[in-house]
Length: 481
Image 1 (cartoon, rainbow, N blue to C red):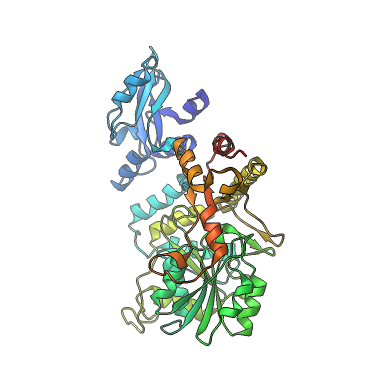
Image 2: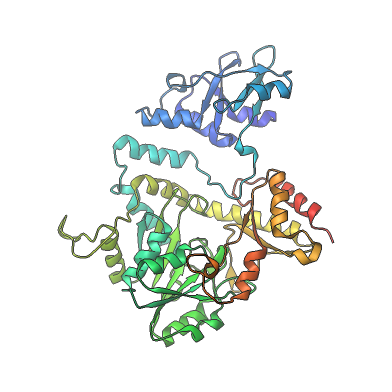
């Protein structure tokens, strides 16, 4: 560990929780080093210590010396690694290495953070500050100022009139379908290459999902195949902006208008993506847009979702359905069958902090994508993510296709090589028509081919240039003709 990082995470033992959080966030290893007035080692404070202290009623101005912290095991800077490993346990994951003056010269770390993850949220001081406010004031359930604040911020970001926060992205889709009166006997057109929640939400209503193949460049629903699947039972089209690239909305909306169908944008993976300079969600007044804030999404609340719309009657209906079908004018008076799909104030507090830095998140995601594309473009057998000239994709996950025929290794073998080198990766979604609970005797060859070759690489916004170089080097070593 270099001296610059050690300095960032080293603070006096009299520092406040607020100062400790700043140091922890700067170091990104989950802890800060405490030292005394002689710069000698005093102890460690972890993000877990602080969470527990805040839950016990301490404030951000409490001294870290006054909160409970476990004893720390230390070692000499000259201790062999083999001996240090023997000192590691499930409770001891960090050993400060001291010189003869008891000054920390390095840290011996041994935990899962040594693996480069596919995606990890960046939770900083603002998120913790706002969540702490919820805890300290008691507003931890679905009431509280952060829910409405998050809804307004997200609606403004997407350019919609209305937004309703939900418990997750799947419930957002379910509510959107319910607000359109989709029910048993209806059919809803969905892409087969998507996360299964898109189809599940249709099933929840009793309707039948009708699967459409992908187009080969953007991997989105093939708009040219939609019309041939429309029947008198078809009531809506769900469009998924897959892996951050917008679908071809003009053609899809023309088809929907011709056949009097509703359109829902599943933008769970595409916060901030642009279609002809318009943010996804309510492009050209799409009926409804749905988003997910799962832990690996561009904006996260841990779990959470959002429905956006420009139609007031749908907005009002969704708000009632989200809250047990309760009348907005008379408490505990339930006018329709509803659901408990509410977002908590705790989740929304994290969402507000995330939205305050959304532009920075998107910019850093774009930089990661550009670096990958530049370094991977000439590697045989690798197909980079495509971007139509009318679109601006966002890098939810940087996903590539690995062609086994080019050099004989294939996607699955490359994943093993990455894992061997402490790099996590993910295959693309399995097409829904191939899933056991939906399996149908049909061939949708484009989506099947994309799924069999698709691989998502580490894409967290805290990914360093060295991390990207490491990932690319592994691919280069294994992708030779």
